[in-house]
Figure 1 (tube, rainbow over the protein chains, first blue to last red):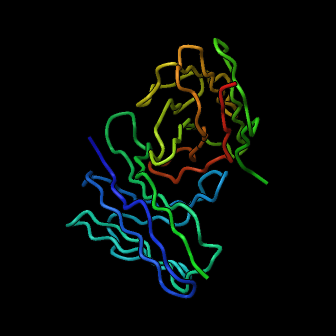
Figure 2: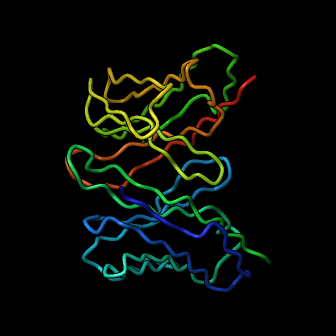
Length: 114
Length: 114
C-alpha cells in the first residue's frame, strides 16, 4: 500500500534555513501537502502542491517536488522559534471511493534553538 | 468564522464505558474524517464519511463507531471493545465537489483512561 516516510527529528538554529524531507510511494498522487502541528493542537495546512508542479513558493516556505524520485521537501527560510512544531507530509489517495483520503507521514519534529 | 469544533478538549474513560467525541463543522463540507494520533505514529484513519448517512471504515476501525445523520456533525464513539483508547483524536473535513481538497482539522480531543 501507499506509504509516506519522513525523518523524525530536525534541529536548527534561529535564522538558519530548515529543510524537511519526505518520500512517498503512490505515483498517482495528484496533490501533496504539508501540515504543521503545534503542541496540543490540531493540524494546520501550510501549503500544498499539484503533482504537475516542481516548485511552489509562499513567503518563507518553498516546496520542491521531484516526481521521478517521489521526493518532496519543505524549506523554511529564516527559521524562527515560533516555527518549532511537528511537520507532516501527506499524499492523497487516488483509487475507488477513497478519493480525497490522505496518507500521512509520522511527522518531523522541528526544534529551533535561539 | 467557519471551522471545525471538537469537544471536549479532554475526556476520561472508565473501564467498560463507552464515550462519545463530538465533531461539528460549519464549512459546508461533505466529507468528514476521524484520525487517531499516538506519539511517533503519525495519524491513522479510523472512519470517514463522504456524504450524509454513509460512512466507511478506515485502517483502525475496530472498537469505534460513528454516525452521520447531519452534514455538520460526525460523532465518534469509543466503545469498551477498544482496549487501548488513550490517544489524541482529530476530526477533519474537506470541501464538496472537488477531489483532493485540503483537509481542515479541529483542535483535537485527548482521551485518557481513569
